[in-house]
Amino acid sequence: MKYLLLVYGEEDKMAQVDDLSCLAFDKSIRDSGHCIASEALQPVATATTVRVRGGKATVTDGPFAETKECLAGFYMIEARDLNEAIQIASRIPPAGIGSIEVRPVRPIREAPNAHRK
Image: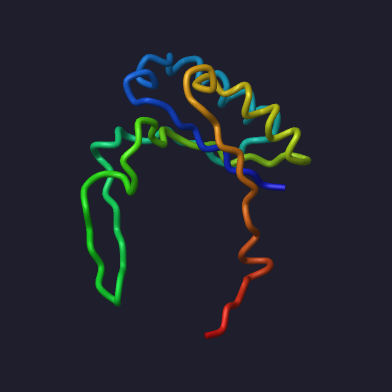
């Protein structure tokens, strides 16, 4: 099953995490065959939020929500089950200063959820 591991933390603290430790973790889960994709994100100041209401798109600078912790990056992994995904998430270096959200990926292509109005 696929899981998305979302890495959250306070930006100033996240900047103190050694990139080399993150790259070593990334290599370990790639070598084990668990990693499908992973990326770090640019700072929150570079974010843009797009909303469409009533057919009209509005664009604002910054993230959707004002919060102390921000999304810093992600890992898309393949794991046997939630327990294995949690074990992998617990080894992500920023887990010690931030949080890792573990979320199953919904197989939308294989089982679309069609809503009728």
